[in-house]
Image (tube, one colour):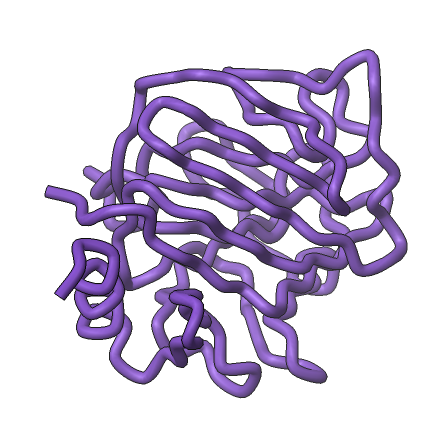
Length: 212
């Protein structure tokens, strides 16, 4: 068995019911349920028309935490953990959406949090890190991609310290960073800069090598 095929077998064992294609891509969402993901935070997620969906603006929350947070926010965290991989995911957002795709999320010290991760932002008008940038690592500014109001696609490469993010085929981030090397995936709904709707579908991942 080749090293790559061994990596694929490990992914299938971790993901259980996930579907694997002949080319090594593994589906992380069956289009019907939230199996393989855990909910974090007060925002309710559901599956609507074959997409993981959340509408934070329609969900009122009580002020929480020392800062008395008043905006709705929640996450989905993958059961599986991933190191070096290629990933694709389609997302639908609006101009007032505050969301993100998180990769290599460490085990959280607080069960109610997502953990430390790389956050690939989804927020076209974000002041510092618009859609396609990695928060705290790389901003696309002064350029802003127009992803809101339609289905858009992430193509992500995480290969050691090399991180690449494409939106609709356009490379917006190509950097090296060594803060996080392995962990879960995360999906965000809502935040301080917006409570607009967010949807995800066709989430697939392909391992590059076995992680230790």
